[in-house]
Image (tube, rainbow, N blue to C red; front, side, top):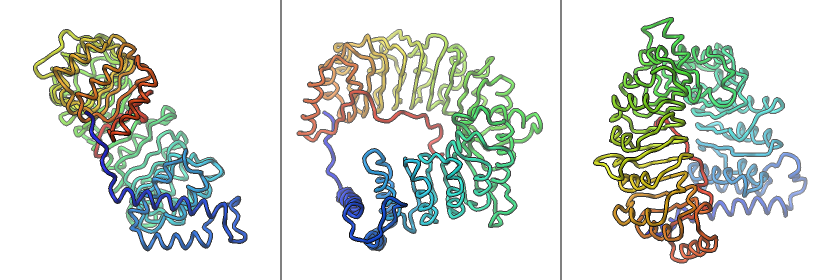
Length: 511
């Protein structure tokens, strides 16, 4: 039986109550204000009443609580009107707030949001502006705000960054450690020089001493010159990642040819069309790599991944299974996370599991799977996250997964057209998934309410189940089960179209 919902803590109740009251006061002021000349059709500003509320909240609640309230309100862009969220930004952004995620605003609010952030956010250390797509008419207000955010350490500024913004960061934001400018196609080497070695900076230190992550990847990164990555690698001694920039390996190869003895501190690397020669250069230049993503590697480059002694997380795209097999035989026991996307050849699940006895996370896309047996001595015993998408899964493979993945917590199986109720029920009777929290079966038209009942009975920690729209289950039965869960306070979410959020491969937890 799934767990019961925990009783809400007093802190959670208090937070919800305060958040409701804040929004209610703002709405009341918008529609029923008695203050003359308070025009909400210009830039909405705090009225006298809201200013008093701001002072009361600032003196009554800690900055950490105000930060939590503010980010919660800003994240509800579909439920809370933009005017309310903007006024909440002015109301709750006080001295001591350290982390701010702006969320999505209409373009007409960009100027106001940036002004409010710069005016009251001097102490912000983490700022996420991914929901604000800066156009030419907004650049001035963004740059003006950045000049005041001198304590910022982590900044997300995707798709819209340019050299002038980088120069501003290099002059004023001298504590910056992580910069996400992925998707920004207008960045040049000159801009990066202004970022890292700005001669007009306001303090003696510069960003070469602090910057650890600069994400240059994302859509549009294909047009960025490899010289940008070369410059950052040469200039930033503490750099551990260039994010999803797909030509990092090419940059390392160029630098290795110029200075064969030079080593870098990268812990994550993404490269495309990696040759064996480039791979050897990567191994010599980056001995501390912990995670790697090779897209369409050439020759037999995959064979020599074992040369990286600290490597434990591997992502491969468009590779031959025979090449992967050679690599796994050399270093399979070291791998904790494996992501396979489009593998040429048939992947033997038992062989994969036996070669990677310490695997914790496995994600597979567009792979032909085979399975010769339903049990094995040690395959997949330690796995906690298993995701298989866009790959047909035989009943034998499902039985193997059910029998072997005794500690799995997140289980996603995409195309389960051959799966039937008896196969699931029999496996559950022999090996209950005692630790599973989320189960998602995609195309499974042969599964009925019998499978749902079996999963509920044998999975004591199950809290999420989908994709029920692709099962042979009537919507009325799903709604009835939802009502039963609500009445009995069972903590089980039934998804008709799968999880609400996409799974993302995060290579290094520390980053």
